[in-house]
Length: 187
Image (cartoon, rainbow, N blue to C red; front, side):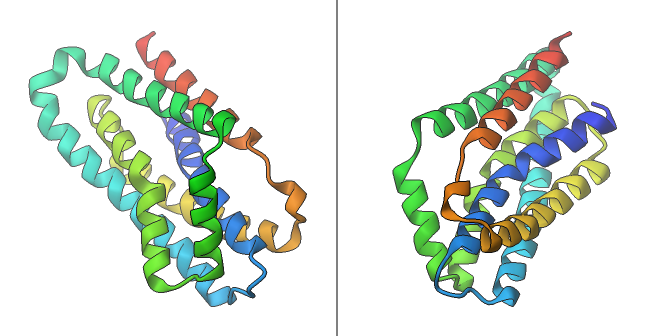
């Protein structure tokens, strides 16, 4: 997997952080800027950490699955992409309510819970990176930085945007990109 693909995956992985950060910024409870920055740092740490954990588990499993490594990585990315598209189209009211509650009460515990929730996909991506022998120093750094940056940018946009800004188009595009990268791996 090349640098361009890794950067694209990093941006796509950070989209969940972006959405949660927008919800935080849209909160009317006056979230302190320091809390929003702590949330962004937490996103970066958890996204990067979960990618590494997935990579190490995938590297361990790769010894036994080396003949089907590329199809497995493709399948994982396609499933994640399809899940993102399905979630955007179907909508997940419970997730939106959870984001709104967390944005209104941005405690340390809520920041950690949101960070874990947004980093589950990074774990699966880390597994797929093991099968394609990605440069993990670059991949982990790119994912962590993109997640942090999207957390900061999302918060700023949320603070300055009206409620009408809420759209699922970026999530659908992100899902399509993940599927495209997965299919590209096969060829």
